[in-house]
Length: 272
Ligand SMILES: [Zn+2]
Ligand SMILES: [Zn+2]
Image 1 (tube, rainbow, N blue to C red):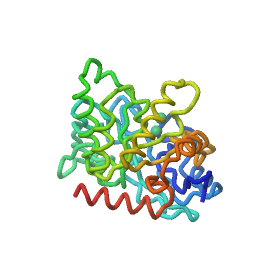
Image 2 (cartoon, protein in one colour):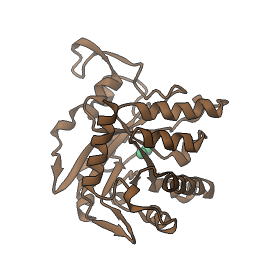
Image 3 (cartoon, rainbow, N blue to C red):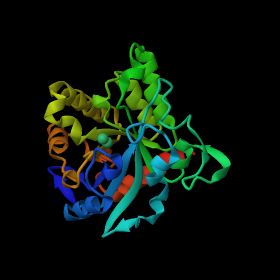
């Protein structure tokens, strides 16, 4: 178990593999580092968005639909099947919701056409909903952007709202956080957001989000958003922040695997 002061970091629930294309390690390498650092649970959440391919063909996303070959417990580490899905419009839709697949990965016609999102959704444990391209929200009102986040949180497979502090789309923070609480979903506190190149403003936004989660009793997910194996399980900035603001341990859903798996079950149950 990785601990820092009062805060435990038993899980890293948002990490990337080479499948994300701008990340550099295999799932096996990530699991090995997770094990070395004493993590109980690793969530692999590659980008599920236009970043993967401009062709938007099911073959470009097949990584997500063969997760069952991964050992669920791999060298003693629980391995979760995730996706970091882009929010793509002001209705809070997630990538692939409007891409109808007529054929499967072999090229054979499907008996029942299905959206790409549904195809991916049926094989993942959870999604992290994030924004990487905020251009669709330019000029939108705060009511629109707030509703967008709330709608995304209402999706049954969305467990975590990803790196809200650097989404580039402002919203009414309390409404979003309380919607997460109502739907038993989690607000991410993301190690990557504290990297120097994002600047102090982003760090302060993340701090404000964490403080409000503590005040409103909203559960958080801590993650590294590692894009290379050696970042897995390293929570230097997040642990310093949570210590400093005396963040209550009971609101950290990722403190150990048992808690995270319980929260996941509750969230999916709440949406069923
Ligand atoms: Zn990325
Ligand atoms: Zn990510």
